[in-house]
Length: 426
Image (cartoon, rainbow, N blue to C red; front, side, top):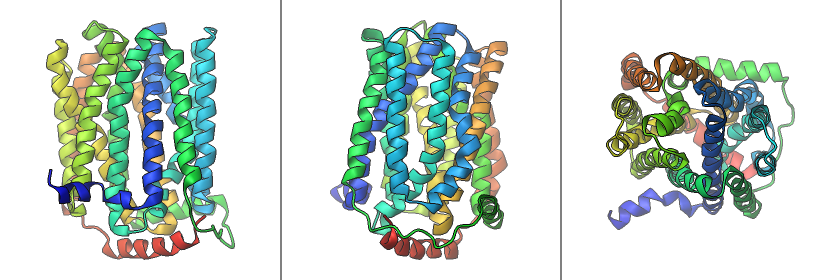
């Protein structure tokens, strides 16, 4: 890779606050993926039930669906920086409680599910604040798209390292150590937040009622179809395709006849594909190509799921796991980047809350649906159906996404308003 190409790929690091945020989140996200892998494995080991795997995802993400709109209002009203300090600290406490529960060996399924619900509530306020806050960390608005792509690369790097590390720790030291390491990882992100410097926040002089602000956000989406169609596509993907990872522990234990390390390796191969997709996005210079990348990545995801679903030989299946990883989080990155570039500055928190509601609302329902169907027709056939659904979704949305044009006026207004807001923030 040429020096100028490398410089373009990491240009968002020129912004001090963003560089701090990236470094802290990189450590924390590895811990998050370790915990996520360990929770799925513990539940499947205890129950051997695909339905319980789906229920575990539902327990964590459905509360985010119920509360994310309120999280968006809070993010638009108050300091997103302070909200993140609170939510990241609360997430650390949740991880400590989970670790203590497992290490004492006195736990049952409902206790793990209860802590998953608590994490879902925390995320309902964390996500709508964290995503728009990137605007406040990046001083040069030309670096925004690169910052969003690097965010995804960070998550996907953690997805590569976290599950593999979790699989090894699960086999050698146990789930309690995985959860303890996740709790420790939050020290990095909290420290990075404390080292950041922002201008003082000037809160709005008057605040509307919650119902009025919710309606205002919905009306904005109706008036901005370029954003609304992307959220609709995210709903379909989250319900019918993205819950594929709910049944991956079954492939590790039953199809490939492996153990926790096998599960970790599968997730890591998917993470390898995901980070490849993120770095591809980060190195791109033309944001106008994002819709084409979105459609292509969903096609790759569908193809990977179809071939992975009926291969029982572990080494032969891993190239398709890489394809699944490339195609799974790249659409999310593209959708979020397009929406963030299109949304007006004063609406970003509420827009992101609708994005979070779509994802956290449909994904847990999809996970339950995936678990139920898998009980009836088996994990391989369920994964095959999800791959076919990905291709159907492309057929449904490709015409609009290819012809839809970005709202240049809205994007320009957003950037000008963002520059004013950064001066006033925190």
